[in-house]
Image 1 (cartoon, rainbow, N blue to C red):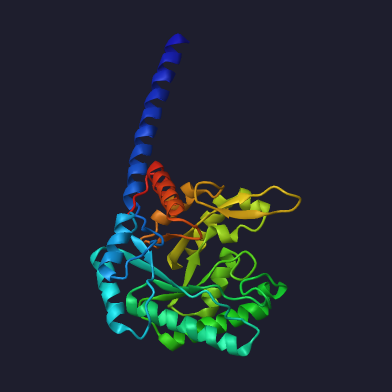
Image 2: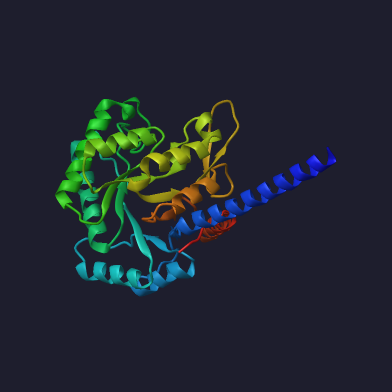
Length: 315
């Protein structure tokens, strides 16, 4: 029995060692398949000079940027920004056009559609990856507010029509148009984002991922890692840019989630960063909705530290 036990022990020890070695090799292969994440955010007191602005992003450790303020008609300045950011390897992640494409007022709705169309044209000219807006809202008083019809077939059809009109007016070769995901308006889930991709049926239509925006129930809050994995499983090839936020549950007599700085909430950033690093087209990860430069620095430090912890690199 003692001899058998020793043989069994030695066999199991050897098997365990082999398994650990195999696991190490697999982990190394996984890491080799990962791509560096391009983290970005706003620059406070941003210099007007394109070269200096690109350098300012690099000094903050950013490999991605929001589109600088520039008029679509100013071709020389657009070219200067595009070339300066390319020289310093800072990708322009997105042109934000935050307006209501479904405004009840016909004149406002037309003006908003024109503004977003020009935003996509600017993204194409300046070398940004996408122009992004929400699909809109039927709320009559808050442009992004909740409304029962924001999850209706009428909303879906209008969102499809607007996306097609914007894309067909610009016909971009590189830049994408995206709707940011929302918790109370379509697209409110990975499946509905897939439905929109199929219905819009344009190569220039992409996905903008903000997992925090999708957390609209206790189940999604507690199982946000599963939600993040579902987003990447179903939408990965179409994800163009991402937002980095976090969520805390403010305990009261009803459900109340509050946006907080990354690292001070419950979003599973280990899962988020690992899955993002697996995408070969390297969608940027953009910090947003913070108030001060110090808050942005703390958020960036957390994301870089968490990425280092899980074996993710940053560009």
